[in-house]
Length: 264
Image (cartoon, rainbow, N blue to C red; front, top):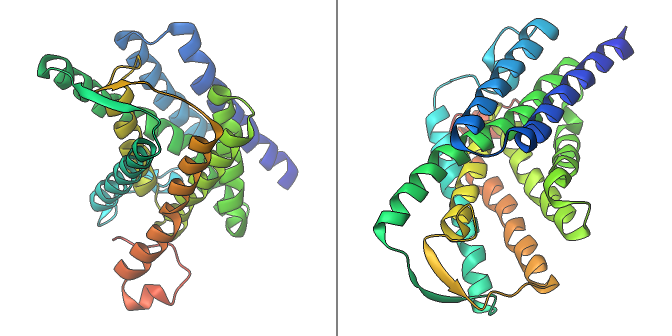
């Protein structure tokens, strides 16, 4: 029975993962088609979780709106945006690019508005599919001790849909995935993870836009392994930052407890 139940959960994840990664390639990224894809994902996730797996509450997949959920989302956004901003400062100091100026307001405002909404939805899809679904799975089968490792590996493998199986990309995804999963373990929700994802993606779009043209004009952009290693090192700083922040913000009784109910 347990093996059959696990197989059903894995089939549900595979369905969501194939939808999330293949449908955009078929429908394209025009705004109406992409918004239809987003709506379709959340409908599919609801059907899989509610009618396929018997989950009845949003909290089962980490989307419960307990006290402090908006603060968790906002804090995560600040951390994600901040870490990506530091990464770009390090890249600039290393000579990865030169800042040639700023684009006009008529270009910047629509870009940032589109990125703000689009990156939130994209981040929510990824976090619900991997960390939210993984949270419900690990709780159901008593595997929470493996949650951080399991979801980090799944996140790295899933990211290979876009980045390929290169060592640098896999290492980066594992490092980032561990930080994202840690927030779920400590808070019992995926809001902070969504926020980190959202903030990091927002900073990335501000620099690079959707077609390589962001808020700033960059010249003499170069690539190389040293930039990958620097990016991984800066991203790794997120984990101790989150450990410190989440322990500092937890009430005294929760600091001594292993129960993931921190509201921040």
